[in-house]
Length: 114
Length: 114
Image (cartoon, rainbow over all chains, first blue to last red; front, side):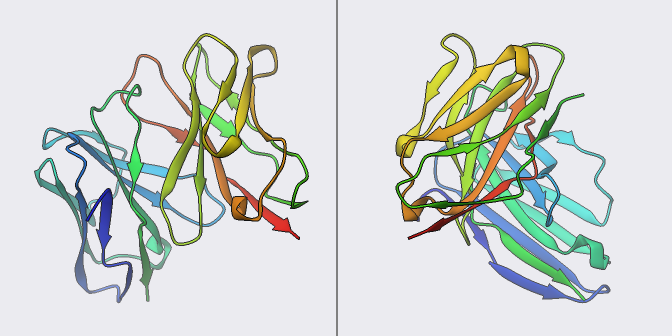
């Protein structure tokens, strides 16, 4: 595997379910990001991790819980979601967490909350 | 606060024709500016970026963009569009002094007709 991979690619869950999204980067990067992409809205940065430490939480509801066990893996744990949480969730990574470093994106997980 | 406006939601061009996608930003200082492309089912890929220096920047796949401070614009251009350029294009702005928190526009979807 190369680049940034995300699993699953598609996920349908009920509002009472608990699920997790996984992201893995094979680029030797130190920073990882979660974004939410909703139709007709700008891409929204949710969380930033640098060297496994969370450096940004963009006022995300607590029903989204990130986890970064190491610099290569990033998870987004989901529980009691709402229908408006249906979106494409993109993971990205970069060598460092300053704007000088290019972010590389995964293909995303298409989440549908029913 | 930073923001990005992409006034064109959808553009259709003929293959071989020239292309210009508009981007206007709002930022108090000199911004870092980016253009990303997203093909169906894939993550975002960086086309080009402007940090400083020459206001005309060259990117991958034959794209270029021009930073015009007086107009707060960073329009993307390509002299001759190929069918494979059909995708969604996102303009983004970042802070020179801050972390890697990019603010994205809502995107412009490009359709290429034969």
